[in-house]
Length: 396
Image (tube, rainbow, N blue to C red; front, side, top):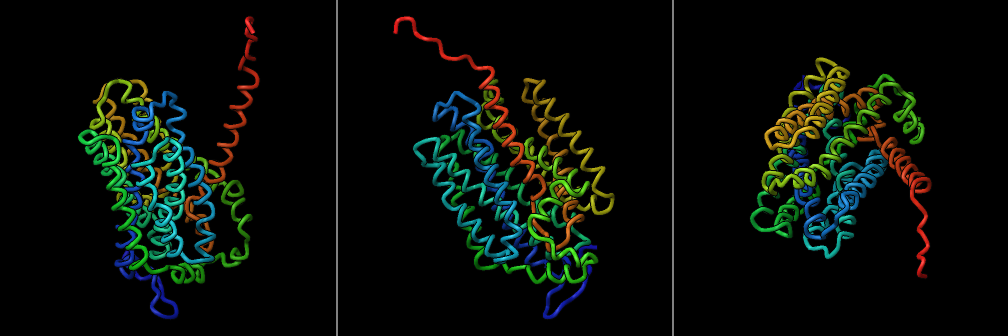
């Protein structure tokens, strides 16, 4: 149970939610601010690209997501290793320092390149700050309540994503796409940095306590790349979680970048787009408080598989219908499916990993990088074989 003590070590280090409720609650609040930084962009940024910078290409408009995703993948990949070297708190504070310029760059940047660069910084912010809040909560509660810990963390983060997406749409509909919606981000970044710096305590002693009682103590000697290979393709459970994590992140990225442009192409206003963009992460965030603990009781596999199927239905419904009512239904379904998948995936990776490995979101990182590389190569190949050579101008 969440509130039961799971052991002690030298000093006052104890595992369990009740024993660490103050730090746990602080981390939940802090992740709400982390999620708010992403929520700033869910409604407004694609529309800034198409309407303010007059970018006609959808591919170029969603380039900000590519910069975010690639940088976040690398930040996730190394965050756990760096946290073991320098401490969780130091990585958390560093994440907020990278996040501070983001709302200024998007709100006042003179070109689209500033938005793309801001999202690279946001990727570092999320890769470090969100990862550390997950890792630190799992450190605090120990092995018996991982699903609950992850569920509460993701609840706070994605509820904030949804509420911020709604608020930025509301503000943009009344005052314009820039800079007013990004005043929220300035507040999020400032408060997040203060909380992380002054109030958060490191949890390395908690993970050492758990590791000292872990049955597979001999695994401590594995190097970083050995752990990377095992979590990528050497273990069937971690492989299954990795590919599901990749697809889940691709779904979320599509919702983030393409959905606002898709809805706007049918004449939907900014405020209604903001509502649709809010419903999905709010449902996702709230239901994770249920699905996370359920995965501790029922197991991980069934929730992950069923959740992926629900996501597929939601995406097909969005593509096949052209009315606000059906898009709203699809947004709810997408939130339900993602809530079934996301906290369960993170908990399943912790189940299959030694505590010393605790590299959050390594799930999918290798596959994300490899997929981007494969897609880039395929794109170049298509150009090479399909594109016509420029014809000579007869008059020249």
